[in-house]
Image (cartoon, rainbow, N blue to C red; front, side):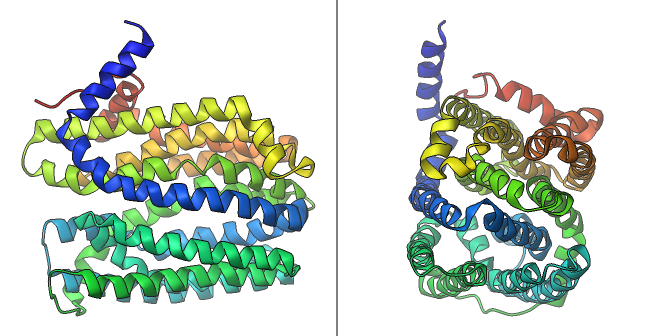
Length: 445
């Protein structure tokens, strides 16, 4: 059978798949949201990058990458566990949401302080970077309001958050255009970044109280906080390790090279390399409650749902990878201009890291369902160590190219190679191998 025919048969099976039908309805809003914001965001950030130039764009992304490392910790690993608690009704909805909110506000405040102090030791002579980090760090407190997303994911009400984010993104895009027209500074750009999180958070809270069906009282429960934190510590570490994959390359590029120009060019490449992530992330988010629900009811159906998720994510990654290989030079030239032409070659390497990163994200849902999420810390720690080590070796030699190679290698090591050596998560690697065929798109019995 020809590849074209295999694809046609697989699509027909997908249409008849009960899980896929349910997922598509919810994921369509998530994808629509991200397509809308991507179209606007790519062109607006390209406009900003052209205005700033590689050096200043590198300074901005250095501060942003540094803050993002701390932001990964500020979520406290609560997302997946809180969604699971709401779906399985472990506590009242209001208790889960408000307890999560309090924990994240406290964590965000502490981490804002730590980020502002740490950057002074990492980059002692760069006062502008200190100020940018301080401003951006406040997003960790404002993002606490996004606990409403746990409720949205649990009940698959993605239309609510999609409409909010689209509205805020349009507003933010307009601010960035004004920023360029009025020749604003990096401080102004950082304040726009901070305001996005605050506006989205407030809008989500308002939407929740307007649309909720259960009149559950919001209250803090110490015992629930204690229980969920006891389960989430490895997810916190896993989140940090995962963020290291995506951000430590930028931090090391900015710290190890004499100026930020190379980082600016590298950031332009990774900006495009990551723009497709919204598609698999929307699908993974929509699959999550369905997979967790099936785990308690039908093991066979549950495993088929997981395999279906892996297969879809893998082939979306392959499709985007091939597209970028063919058109990277054209894309960079149109969006960023001649100052960023070097980014095209870096982009052709970076795009493939995303495929394994997204498969790793999909695997986290399987691990939580299996109760093996503690192993995610081992996987991500091993990958992060490899990433830092490879960056340390390759950046002085190859610059941005070296950082791209290091990140790709680290994603493969963490999400595919290391699981092969751990019995309880080895099955994940087997499913990933199977995902690169079309056999994962089977119609359920």
